[in-house]
Length: 286
Image 1 (cartoon, rainbow, N blue to C red):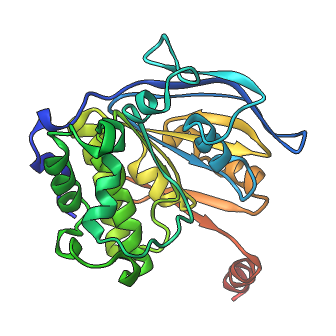
Image 2 (tube, rainbow, N blue to C red; image 1 turned 180 degrees about the vertical axis):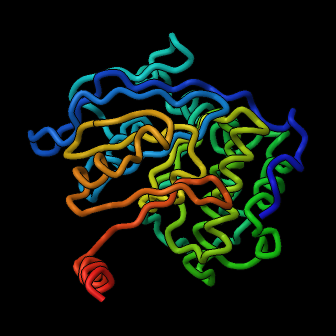
């Protein structure tokens, strides 16, 4: 992937502020997210973390309007009702990379990325003068330009993940939502995707919101971390304020140590299992 700052600043829209206020989500009549409030701000990367089943993806899908809340509001730029906007207008402001997208067949990579331009096209797919350039930028940013003419059904899981991300970037929105975006990616592309998230926020003012499982990746990329547990937001702030040993140990139900890497200054977490504890006991008695 190439760095996002290599493109000119006027090729992407200014970021939008997206706020969820008092959002409660229910499945089959049972509340699974309770009174959640958070704001994604232009130029910031916000990462949602928490144990499995804590509601991270549900919150992200709700602010992307894939899930209708039982209560709560969605506000864009301080006044626009996010739930009242037409699908086309909302899609010009907010893009979502979801988990588990199907593998398409009969389409090239370029065709697939071009689907990200649907909010701008007129009837019969016409009247999108900026579409071609947007698709080419998205292919380059995600490092899949060499695959542009390949059939999507022949891609690996990691390649397909990057192609879906390219489709989101071709959408050219001011808010980008990513649900576990490093899934299927090898180490190199995980790191490059995290760098791209920062480039989009820092260089283009995009409001980036992501769900990540890796706490170290979250600490490295995020301006703010939102920690969820049992469907509730229990902390929202700077990584060093949210990722404390006491809070993480209580939330995940396992001892988690936190330290600052002396070389990078970044937070590092370490989950301590039974075998780690045994090793500690042996080292203290030897």
